[in-house]
Amino acid sequence: MVNSLLRYLMGLFAHKSVRDFALALIFSFLALTSYSVQAEWQSPAKLGLPQLAPPLQLNNLSGKPVDIASLKGKVVVVNFWASWCEPCREEFDELTQLQESYGPKGLVVLAVNLAEMKPRVIQFLKGNGFSENSVEILLDRNSTVYKTWKARGLPTTFLVSKSGRIEGVWIGAIENVESNEVKGKIESLLRQ
Image (cartoon, rainbow, N blue to C red; front, side, top):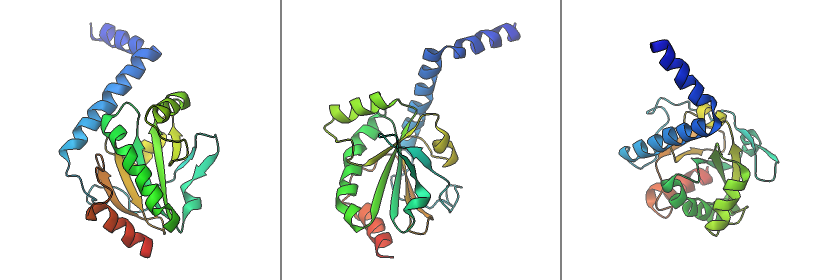
C-alpha cells in the first residue's frame, strides 16, 4: 500500500505543471514564514550563515554572465525574489531606489530571480513600470544560488561589503530604504 502511494506521488511530481505548482507552494510558505522574523539587518553568524559571500555567477536578462567576484571593491546588495511573491513585488521599488541613490557611490543591487523564465520577469517589469536595467536582474532558474546562499524565504536580502564579507541579512521585505536601519548600514559600508 505504501509503495503504491509513493509510486503515485512520484508519478505526480514527474509532471512539470504539478512540480511547478509544488515549488510555488513551497516558496509561498517560505515567504509567509519570513514575516515572523524581525525586519532588520541580522548578522550572518546569528543565522548560522557563512561570513564570506558564497559564489554567485548567473546570467542577467541580456544573457551576459555576472560574477559577484568581479564586484570586489563595491558594496553589493543580493536580493532573492520572485514575481509571484507579493512582498517581493512591493519591495522591488525599494531596490530600484537603492540602486539610484547609491549606485553612483559604489553600490550594486543584484536582484536574483528564483525559478522563473525571462518572459515572466519581463512581463513583471513592464507591468509595474520598471525598466530592464533599473537593477541588475539575474536568473537563478534552478534555485542553485538560492540554496548555496542559504536564503531564508522570499524575499531575503544580503548586504556584502567591498571585501566580500556578508555584513547583514534582511529576511522579509525592506519597506523603507530611507530608514536609518537600511541607509545607515549601507552608507557605513560605502565609507569603508
